Image 1 (tube, rainbow, N blue to C red):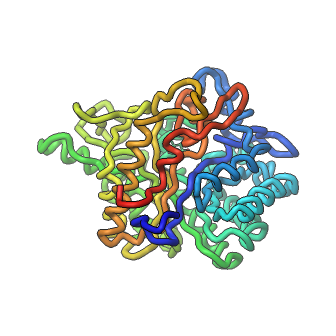
Image 2: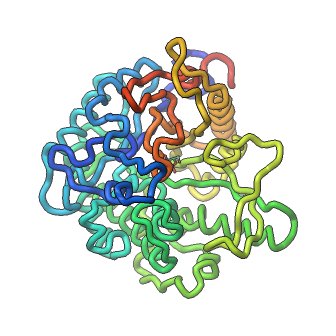
Length: 444
Ligand code: BGC
């Protein structure tokens, strides 16, 4: 890192990916199917019928990808373990070839000076566990802790940073409210149980880590400010509900041991009574929090919007990404400062931040010119620096994503990579943004 960088010398600069989005070969070498394998192979579920069967072929090309990260000057890599690769049925028999893949990945990272940050769950539940009720079952917490224990025993000698779940809100909202993500259900009562069991699973895995691990463990939440679209009381109330549903739903039980009262109103008859003892479990001390930040929501009352009766309105004059998200860098500073109010000095990482823009289809002169993404990163890295200057204990920043990859139900139609992937040849080409990510010299 350039000596004049305004960031601390030990600040981690990384990129993030997830197993199903980049690895490919989902059933190779004895792996079991995940809910994403099943969902993407169900006609009509994904754009163009796209699946993660090949994705970026990171399963075979990880060494090339790690060399790229090293050459870009990165110091960390956040990736997820595919649960069904290491435990094909989710429980029971271990697949040694699955563990061996992550062994090779971790060893190659370390040999190239990159620190691994491991996500245990990035949305790809083993399909066999889904057949047994998946996250709707209270038993899911112990299934997850058993899997986590296996990963800790295999890799904690080389992995210093662990996270339990990636974005529990998306798992519940996409997978069980709107059905746009696996397993594709639409049932509010299920969603309430799923979120609760995810939080219990997180906490049970943290307990397992205290018994088996020696380093640090946290969780990754996707957070975004919800600003009222007007001063009208209905819009102010809508923004409060949207905030309770997306942000405080997870922050408050983790930190305070309670759910925000708005949730009972939002879920109505679908809101269950939860055993009181669950909340002391969920409020388990963690070592750091990962924050995924993409946008804000300017929110208005909307009686048709499920479940919050709140929806976002577009801001004339703002830039929007290809996924329809407003580019709003100040929201990253705001989010980090807000987390500080809840968590005090707990170390924080920006575990994802990035944008899909319509890049040129093909590289030219050995690169891809992506000025909108360059501007996006400059502004958001600046916003992270502002939070650091205002006292946030921010330890690192991970761009989403290293590679153009499988964007879930959008298939390959949305490109988030710092590195362009030609999905015919799988050739990698760093975009201009890859070289612009890490600031050097004067502050961005
Ligand atoms: C997820 C990623 C996803 C990204 C962009 C995050 O919510 O963790 O898996 O690709 O957003 O949509």
